[in-house]
Length: 267
Image (cartoon, rainbow, N blue to C red; front, top):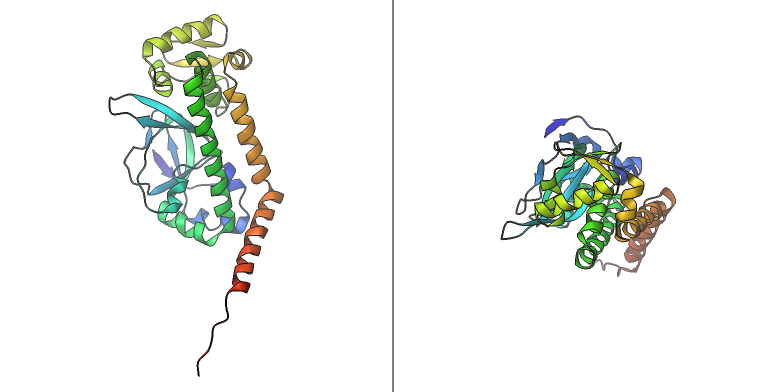
């Protein structure tokens, strides 16, 4: 990864009022990452928080037998290690870039300080945590109930959402890791997708997507999950809703202060 000065290009950061964003921007560095870059390893201390501007990062669970499977995917709408605000901790997953991109990075310690000072930052972190939990629920149900074909189409659509054109750089080995299946299974699925006209691919790992046909092969989880997450973002990160959330939090704090017993002054 490379580091350089930063700007704002992340959905969570864009939802913050200027004053609250100003608590973060002096401490940001802009980093770039390439496909297959490991941003966090399982067991690493979460000492950095990253807000992607572009690209896609996949969270992988590593099993004792060496197998891996993806649980969630994040792009410009999220933040890597945002839950480090709960205190120093170690990662339970490995975060790998599947699509090259950039991100704003801040130390977890500085982010915790800003989080403690800003109701707006606390609100966007809470919204993001709920969307991650929602995605985890859908992926768990999808992995248990749906066939490999539908799940692979879902992952391809999720990755396609985070690129600027119809071309993905994605090897069969990477797809096998996402799905938690053998590479031979992915080879069979790729042949099926090509025959249906949903993708075109070559030996270099370049996959060109036909969005409409791919969508017809995906299970219902993709559309349902994206609809719920988009609705949550639009409703809770929009300016009026954010202002209401901040007003409600300030009202609760004021109420708590008003109900505290008066201190007795001894003379």
